[in-house]
Length: 369
Ligand SMILES: Cc1ncc(COP(=O)(O)O)c(C=O)c1O
Image 1 (tube, helix red, strand yellow):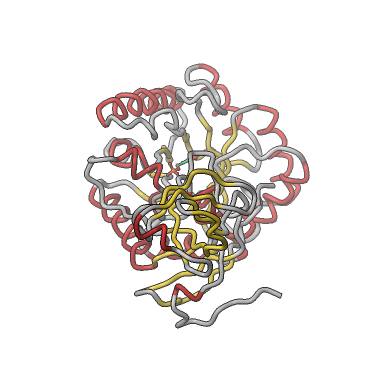
Image 2 (cartoon, rainbow, N blue to C red):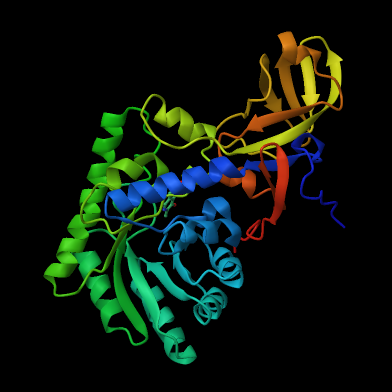
């Protein structure tokens, strides 16, 4: 059985390693993005590959989002289970098991799925007819990231036609992710790279419309490009996800660039050993905090630098006040990449003014299938 602290518990008494979310900050981030979207006439469809929980999806929808994105069927399942009724699955769902599960979600929520090849369209169409459920379909366009997606031009037009003619499917539009631009630190260069991608996406939309099909949705955007892509008139919705918690990778990317988002998520750890002057050990290791974008930073005290993580140890070089830390003391680490850190935990411990307000189950943990 898990030990779960009661609401009102001071944050320092929450056992570790634990994900701590400052609710005031996360809610302010949601509100700030919602205001940006409404001021710029674009809809929000935040990506739940970050939040991985209906708790955050419903908060985003309450703040004005038209629905959410999910990366995988497993994520879509927990979102529908938690009451989310509008879901765009931004990846290709292939194989009969997953397609059946997708229709399980579509029986409870309005689902749209991304496709990039004809065989997948045929499989989805067969399943739609078998289950008697109309499925929304959007083309994923390869617009510069060299990941998945159909190429703009004839290939995109042909695939859109296939969807349009496929019984049980409804052609909704196009999506693209300008992932090659989101982490570029120089704003002018980021804008140039993002616009190259978005122009490829818009060209695909033009070609498809030129062939007589209606493109209702043009969906794109990451946190790093929200104020570039979100200002493009024809983009109908933004898929940004990370702004909810703002990890240190994105804070670094934005640098001096003005933005309204603040860091809302930390991993709380406990000092477990003080083996030598200048070296202090805490309990969040690789199994509690990801390092795919770099080592985490210590934000609760001056003078501590994370030098390495092993499975269950965080090795810090400490000086000044940080070198006074003793076993039992708590520290806070800010992950460089929230999404891959979140996926390692069972709960969010959501606090307000330093006190636990609610424990939120991380229902989407490990839902990568
Ligand atoms: C398809 C898709 N859309 C949107 C995003 C935007 O996410 P973020 O806001 O974290 O940059 C991602 C990030 O991986 C993505 O893969």
